[in-house]
Image (cartoon, rainbow over the protein chains, first blue to last red):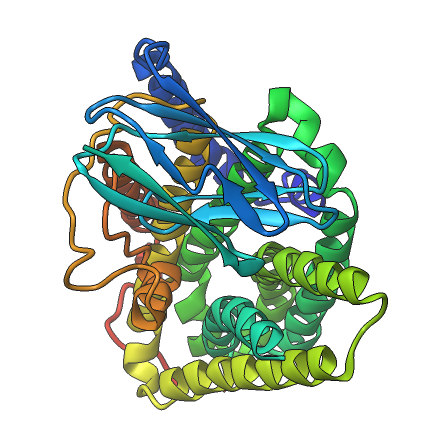
Length: 125
Length: 278
């Protein structure tokens, strides 16, 4: 809101000079956007009583993953993984989807960042 | 108590690094305290609002509301930082050099301060909303705020604020004639890192899928979830497993900022030295 009022001042031209290449870049990126990850494997996990169910999930290597996480606690969670690079707040009683790029074989930890006793693993054989 | 200490410290630490840089960048500019503290207050209020409406926010854009919101405010912060650097490239030196125009320069400088105030607000809002959600969750589970939670949160806040102060002190000891170059570089790297973070959110939401291969994996040397890794993540956008798109956007942001700074730099004041910015 404050930003848009500034575009009306003398700095408008400069804002434009910044916004145009950024806009251009975002259009370019949208154009670059390849086929959506339709081949992503869908995995579901539930958080209940501060435990993941199932605590270990398997996924094939080299395939993008679509995580569906349902929070059945009566408290907000942050579904997060530093191994898999995602973080998403999941309010109590709701379901969220997180997309993860294709992974190499390995064991990857994910957790509820607000309740660290809640730990789970993604296993890519 | 330990959980609230750690969470509060971690988030305040990350926001504190950015606030510390902004404080150093604006050292000696009249009115900066008002803008920086205003940014912090706006950020805290924003954090409470975001935390309050997290449920609704999450459901927007087919469940991608959080990601789009985060990517948008990060993008906005990138624009504000870019604008600040370009503005400083044009006016920073003349502002310091020509005292007679000081009044005018300060008036114009407040626009640049506003940009940095917005950056502070965004940093505090992003980190603060997690703190609010976490503490609210703990309090709700306990049926009220406990003494341990309050004490833990308070210690976390103090420790995080010390990081902010240390960042500021570390930067202001830099001799004035180098300060402009150092802070410009820091702001540019900060902007590039935030742009790459915005890309990560778009990737997580499956809005951006191009170039999503991992370019390198340095998690065995420095994990970006370690304390140093987090600091570097916030400061220069260090990621232990970046996607190609994150790397492309990071470099593009740096290039765009440098080009714009060159394009708009004041020809009359292209001198290597700047006078003391008092």
